[in-house]
Image (cartoon, rainbow, N blue to C red; front, side, top):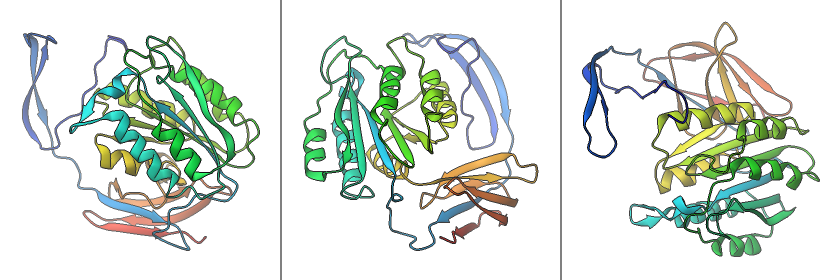
Length: 307
């Protein structure tokens, strides 16, 4: 296997007796099987963290620069509910441009896969500059995925470091992709370099229609290395929400041992947390910590920030 000899799968949510089967890809022939027992889990509660001034307004902080990397490789020509993935992604990006990204926000957009077939080409379509919504929408709408084009994630991330060279203040990088690196690069190394390139840089990854659990886990690890968050989107609605949340401030939930047990984004969807008392650490600059946050089973706790 591409990611080693160990295969990790997501267990069923319902407890009970199950059988795990190892089958061939085409003929579905069972090569091995094993019985497993799924035991009941503890019942979690929910946590939401909202901004102090407004619980609904979704805008990024002043002085924040946003760099979007959009996958337009061959796989983005596949259809989800009858619509090509690239069209779904373009609509979601336009929602970002007309939502939390205010006119004049420092913005850059890099795209790969839309210029040449069987190529690892990546192009800076919008150099970093104050956002002009009409011009940016025109660039987005003109993107068309190219069949057989490859996925140069690492190279795109390496060049994004240069794309943001003149940025000041907080930097948010958003990678939107439906697949893994196919150009032989090392995205993990590229993200590490990008994350330490200066200021407050965060690399958020939005995985679209990713079915392989181990690839999702890889993306989650990359996002952690980039001081960011991984968003898993299986349909158009989730993709739009994920891209919007990717520009929000992230937070972590810590237990009594200062271990991170969960994470989310300010003004984002509720997250599941096991019952207990926690500290919520908001990764803004400067950081804000809220102590003694109590989570009860099947109840939602809302934390409102002071600013």
